[in-house]
Length: 558
Image 1 (spheres, helix red, strand yellow):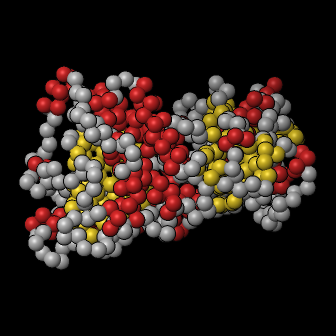
Image 2: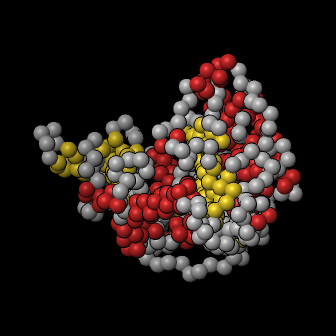
């Protein structure tokens, strides 16, 4: 019960008997809503058009002699209605239209027709009391793409373009993602339009009603997530970002590879017919099981709880085993280098990178007692990284021009006790196999970690990148952090930045794009070695971003 209800009622966002009529049904009366829901009092009946401005198609105003009210001493009772109100409409036109807008928003959120109970308070405000799934009497038969007259009745933005990564209908406001756009601003119920179908777009899967991209694959990560969450997705439209305006209301029909301008009422019904994944038994079961699998509690290898007993989930167990395995491999190199079974050697090349490589299977070919030459490396991700590192001009061999404030800052920069152990100082280590690379770089005051796996199986592919440190004062290091974040975000990485630390991830991307992104990281290893010293102004962020972008466009033949 809503204590201060002037009027109450029930709204069906579709006619449950004739959903194809594209109407909403609202019943209301004066006072509290309990007798309305119970069918004990006559109610005004309204049939509204589902499309804005939600005109009233039919209206029946009945005589309402009684209403349920709240007694001053507590409890409820039935009172007579004032004579002049008995034949008046219990809802105004403005309230009807507001209810219609609310109903459509709730449909888009729950992805099903809704049965909504509401009240109007003494200040004429509409209050939603409850919303639940509306059960329709029947489902419509599967449709054909050639619905008669749609092309004549509605303006088509484009047709017959792209590939359907997930079939379905989506209606809503287009949100065109431009360079530097922040997904935090993406609205609930919007249709995301982007240049590439990058994994980072999956962050808004719970808010999006659809996806449209210029470039994308049906086997990519975003396509997989879209199918899992049943969000219509149309990829490879070539220039959808140019044809669709930001903020424009559109209807996406991925089955027919068509995007309409405005809301197509003949198709809107189909956009809410699938059972929402949250209501499926399998989803509820998986959500309970994931509590024992996904959370990560062992985040710091130096913490007291980083022990087998500290593992509380499968993610903890995997993290613990991985960390100890890497430690063992490192110890094998540093303390047992004389062992003939140890496939370790120093990289021999022309750049100031004291790099030890450990082959754990198929990453290096030939003898390497006197060192490992770049052409001996067969590890796919490592070769891509080295190609970027050796790009002309990326390694500035001249001494860094450090001003006085940066010099004083460098005197206060310290490393942890662990990082100053004899085997760690000045040592860079790479663990490689045919398709895997894990690298730890320590170049002066800069620390870089790269972990990458590249194969023909897109579901296994991943890149992890972490960069931190610097010799200059805070302002210049912060500029370098923003530059790295801008570069990596532009090239599909999901980035996190804290102080002078940058963490970037890329998952489930095709082999060719993964190798291009590893080439980029190779560029950045050498390029950022003394970069913080050069970040003398904010303008340098754009200058260096454009420099890297030019190299990438040249490398990719754009």
